[in-house]
Figure 1: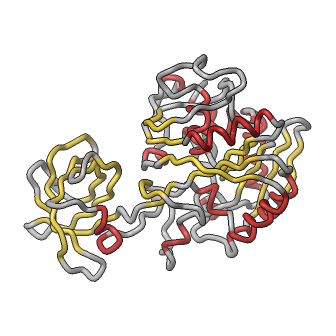
Figure 2: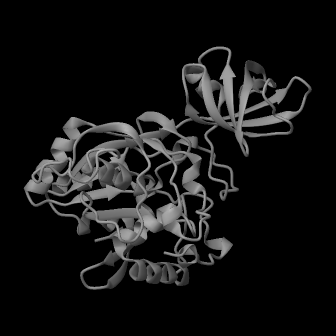
Figure 3: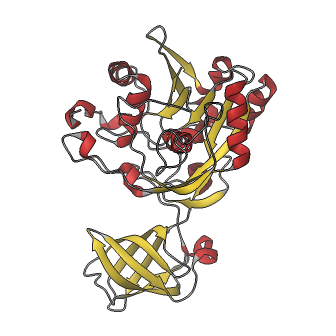
Length: 352
């Protein structure tokens, strides 16, 4: 398919800059694939579209306070965004600042602007990416040193950093939030439980490449970024039992979809034939580069809950694969005409 097919013009005022309160008060567009109908609701109405025996699968990854501010020994200002831990001391990072060559030492300031730690640039990884090394393990210091990074299209400060975390975030490792999960509140989770809807978790640590538009005109030539994904044996058992009992697996967000579909292949390196017919998924703990676009045959996911995504993004391609290219394109046009809020703090879409 052509990249241009996944482009659209979004009025800037539709990019949500702040979250809705309470979380479950956002709008919810529902796409009924069986009938081709589109209906409009609030997110709390999600309860009405799920049935006893359905199983929600959400991503419990937590956004790290991975944005670090500092300066070079010469005094130049530096901004570092940690992307991936290589070992106890070394990280792949995105850096902002001038002449950050290998050998450059950066003094990291804590949240009161006092120098607290240092790191050294070890290698230039291309563009703004660098391999950096700290003098000591940084993980335990991040709450004092770091700031929660927001996506580049959000320009309004967030008073409470927890509002960019899901209520079920547990495992540190992401550079961005799994945004479909931001709509869930404790009240909604209790209502779903009372209806008999199950809830379980996978972990996929989101990198900033999730916001990076595809550049190849033939999308099939795009090589998607790798992200660590984990699905435990216990969760796999819950999913397989749900399927056998006739329940639906409801993926909360594209990250959950990629994890579930990777697990349905027995892992990214094992191909489509590794799982038994009566076992939809197997446990995994690996990096996945599964790229889902129209024409993909879904094996695990029955229902998708997602936000409205960036043009030309792999996320939009995945949603188009699940909902149908023409149907999703129609839904996006309607969302813009109905003034839905887009992107991370925006409204949601449920594809049945």
